[in-house]
Image (tube, rainbow over all chains, first blue to last red; front, side):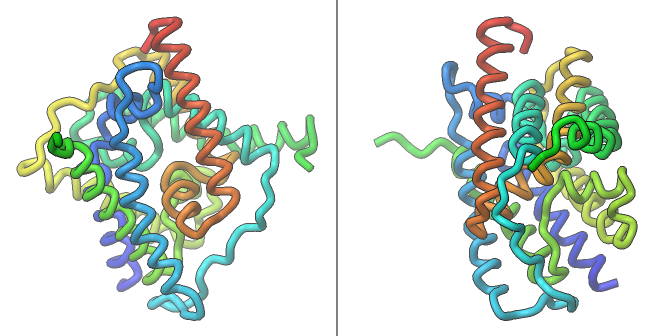
Length: 144
Length: 144
């Protein structure tokens, strides 16, 4: 139960932060990406603001255990593979097209109107299709 | 000297809240706050072991903006009304983030803050791909 409380608290901070920071405004996200247009640096402040508490949390986590037990997630192997690069490129294309990524897509549902619901539906379909795409990709051209 | 734009200050404040949410999720529950992974795991079944934690987190992401709406009203998110753009973008974000194992929150905020190589590489690629997509579809094709 306490675990769920912390999950709700974390989600609430995340959702409120996304809303307040302007990251659910697709014009601000596309404005950040649009270096040849009217460039909007807001996203850099958001990313910087997000990284600071997170870096402190990682530093604090060293040699400790999570409050609810278990262990902290080990760092992923520093392996940069095809799927990481290709996936990030595909993600970036979708991010640029609509100005939305998974977090803001959920945070904005209550006030964004039908385009946000349509984007979410397509994104969920993409999530469902991803394991199949990964398998096809790995069998056609082995990643490593 | 000009005043710092309010959008940058809100961006930083919202960003700090996002990072605080990530810190709570990490230090309390020992989990990485990655939106694509948390939602994607519900869709493709890989998150079956902790469904409730994921659902409650997402409930927080959705609900806090609802509660904030009376004091922090957002009239428009400037989202595209182009059905094809929205569907294509959603599919790309869905497949891409799962293939890359993370998005702006997981690789960007949580990954880069622990100096993860994969986090930096992913972030560089999705920002570059997003930038090129905006240039192509906004300035050359005029679709978005």
